[in-house]
Image (cartoon, rainbow, N blue to C red; front, side, top):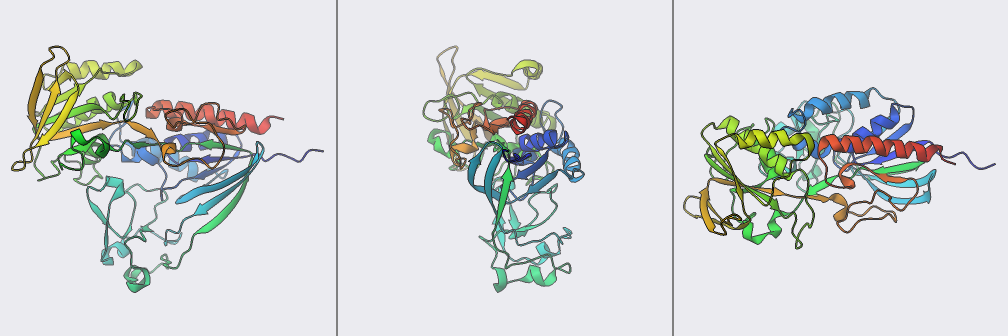
Length: 420
């Protein structure tokens, strides 16, 4: 008799796609193990101020999903974890997972006493380096699990140990070591998400050289109530309120030297962010420089609404360069008008680059012999029976579409388990 196949599913990536996959599979009776490399679940969506289609804060939807995970005995999840090795085949995969030390155990009550005494700081990666946290920190206000973590690149460990001394719950273990976890699963879903394209690779746009050139994800953090400016959109160079803002579309997308494809959400994101500015500053002027505007399906209404706003200008033309006035830190955008073939030079307080979506698998390859397309996304037919991809591991998607793709991935993973 053939051995019984494993009936559990491994989901790699704890963003919206991974969470959705895990919930869909577990709520119809399957055991799911969810692995996330960050010290919290929620992924890229947690960094947004608002997301489509309802334009509500991300914690609105995530809080419901976190409760579903908490109350579901069929889901086990591990944060600060990475898949290192996979062997076996469909129905019988052996997986080795590395559990990185966070130096804070389950006793943590998030009382913040450790943060109050910590003398060391680190750049806050959640806010994309626009502010700092202490070396022991809560990754974000709505972290799940709600537990602190120590950044061992900045913490002096036992040389300092002030956090350990002040903790009355014995939650801090500065001697914690990485552990190895061995899993047996029947199918695997890769929900590894995306990274913003590196804007510093486009020298002409000034990111990294000029403080007031930021990316679209940085704008999301500036507008968020739990962001570095508590939701106030201010110029990074001097903290001034903005009155004239430019958005540069296709910053790294649709360019054979960078990302050759359309990243699907960038136009919509910029129009959304233009509304952030207009809500905070009723007299502010916004110019969106674009090749063409793409707002798929029902989102066309968002574009039509923005077109009616006399303070939002759509300029069809590619930006050639951005330059800074060293005295004022104002930025001059040079672009060619695609309709008149004339060059324009216009001054702005702030420039936002709509950087494209690069798959995480461009930099981190899955430890299995799966198939990728020419842009680094996992193909829908992964090339390995029992392995599937969900969300932005497949292609650029908005949140709503990612959830749909995740439901499909959950179904495929279940079908894999029952297949003989």
